[in-house]
Image (cartoon, rainbow over all chains, first blue to last red; front, side, top):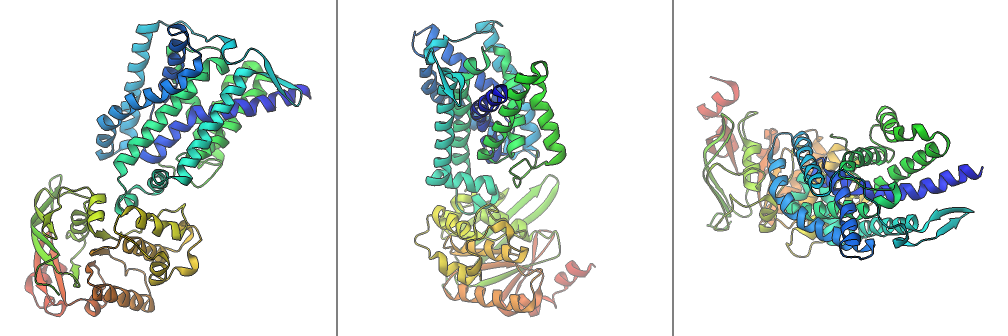
Length: 293
Length: 235
């Protein structure tokens, strides 16, 4: 019974964190209808940003969070205006984005491998707290709780952005119907660029904590992180950013249950959930979002 | 009706690949006027609306609104200037409420204060204001699309086949609404296949055939024009 409690509570924490890992991918798909296949690589860049902050500057890895936001702006702005408007003028933006961002992913991975090698990097465990914190008698490392707190802040911030700001209102309108949004006078290109930057920044912020939740980070981790993120957003609801949280929780609890009771099978969890959801409820657990991909 | 046209198209051309969709199209529209745009399928009616509203850019020619060329402006800027349109297949924000759909348009068009309740009443959606737009019938979504366009406080309203599928009573309501908008000085270009409906609301129609202007004048005279007859029934 204690193991089950551990798996469920740990799964909820893990799931909240992985909601943050995946939410940027869903935001970018929802607003732009393009598939950022380099999403996991941007998460990985966030992890290496935290590694550099710690190893080169001697700072706490939490300073990787503002660095991820700056990186999101510095990379997202030129990348958006360089490729996205052209993609959207093409006949099949989704497929073309798939191919183009696959190339971007390979480039990022190759450059990072050249710079850092193929070795796994980890961050000092005590940097985010050296103890454990318990809930219902189950103990989890402080770093997990910090990661979950930051994830909740980011997801809550995104919810506030959608519900309380003029830009968020415009973003929701674009997610609902891009053509109609243009007809209402929304500067769709500018709002999309901001959403793209937010999506990359959230990916980078999540990356800061990946070494703590997963154990380490390496340049080749991006592809797995993209696949897991895909599974989470399809489980929740493709195109509905806040639906990602539902997908994240299902993934997190599923993974922790498997890791606890059948550890050698746990890597299969995202793929099995993905296949099940596509077969049983193709629009995701939250249902109504458009499935164009 | 003022003497200066509100909107003028000069030799507008548009091609999609090897297909010429609009060919040297020129016409003008005055404030307070309702102009019908008719023609067989594929004659370029919706493309004309798309070019005016900025969904497509003209390859050649000029679109002049209130004395300024607008043919290179993106559609959201054209909406800010005061040109708006409804869609042949209504496109609403399905996950938002009916009221939110209208509010979004009023918020982002930057066209001054708009009375949301008044617009909902005009398009007959007052009692549906708080339900999700996606749960409306297709005809109600058409009315919402029109309401959304009205919430941008347009000087010119482009109405694309709003009559299809409506019953006579609903058509009568739309005719009254469009006529009242024109009486407020709004210019309307109405794409429609329902000629009786157009006859009730327009003094002038523009007939297109293969992207060219075939006829301009009262609808009743159009049926006697040999080019128009040939375009509609072949020959």
